[in-house]
Image 1 (tube, helix red, strand yellow):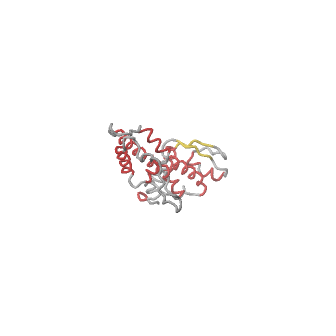
Image 2 (cartoon, rainbow, N blue to C red; image 1 turned 90 degrees about the vertical axis):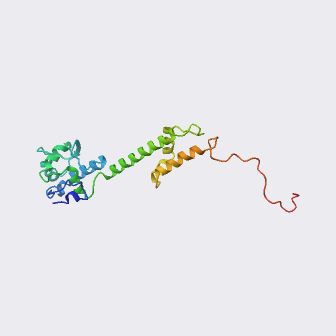
Image 3 (cartoon, rainbow, N blue to C red; image 1 turned 180 degrees about the horizontal axis):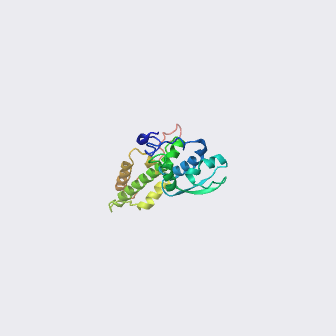
Amino acid sequence: MTGGASCALCPGACRDADLTRLLTGNLQWLWEQLAERADRRGDRALDKGTVTITAPPQAARRAAALGLLGSVPLAAGQRKRLDLAALTTRLRGHGPALTSAAVAAHAASRPLGQEAAGRARHAARLARWQARHRVLLSALPATAPLRPDPEAAWAALRRTGWVSCLAAAPDPDALLNALAAVLTRLPATGRADPPPPGPRRDRRPPRPGSGH
């Protein structure tokens, strides 16, 4: 039996399951391929849709998967489109809530789909910051000397690496608010840098005998 609801590898799908006959060396090839698909998709269940698997060259390993993949033996190197719902139904004979991703996670000894989930969270944060950036720039008063187009400004921030700096900031929202505040306080020229200096004067002390 496995850890169930408190399992660190899968979201409770292994509860009351017996994985002994599934976690064998001859089936490792199958779980490795399914783990790769789960990681790529960010899918911690793999109980819907299809995936394509490739049969290993070893006959014993292909034979070990017959009960899970169907009754027709696979040839070495053969590619098969696997119905995940059908595989889930077969796995439920080993545990009432088992999924292929749960078994694959236990075979790999790690939780699956973490990288894709992280990418999705990062994309959601970027979308939220972009929306906040758009609202702030659109709300600049008509008197502001510089009113950038929100979409063009965001594209420029991404191109120059400032969005990455935003993601690394302790408080990205405060940084965006500060940016909008700076734009409202720019001088009429729309630039914060000082005006070019006038003619340069030599402020060095005169050298002895120079006549100055």
